[in-house]
Length: 134
Image (cartoon, rainbow, N blue to C red; front, side, top):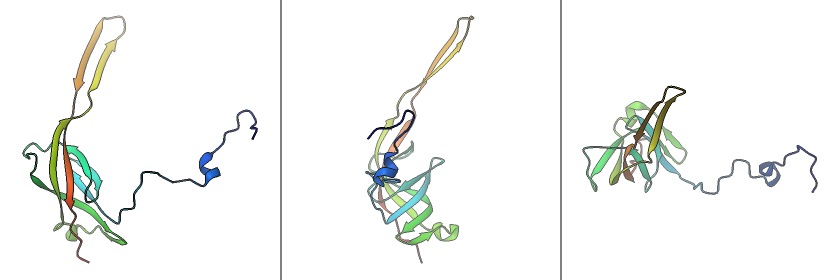
């Protein structure tokens, strides 16, 4: 098939694959939890990287505060109901993230500064998402 110069082919519309993700799995029960100032979408069995939990040791169980629970077609977002629901997770590992280099440079003055940073993370495995009271 010949194309005119500058003409692009959109494979998504040709193949009917718009919005398709090969790795997406069908999850009927999941929750949005808060940990370390961030929010994570989790399901049972997921391993998630959160900011380091300094008091927890590998093998300990932690509770994460829940912001939203989806159980099939039932969506629970009421703060009064979610106050009693805590997602259970097990600590798998403590590790550092990828090194980030911070370089500062000013032209013509010889000013150069280098700084690095590695964020500390805790890997947790979600073991239980309690069903919301309907």
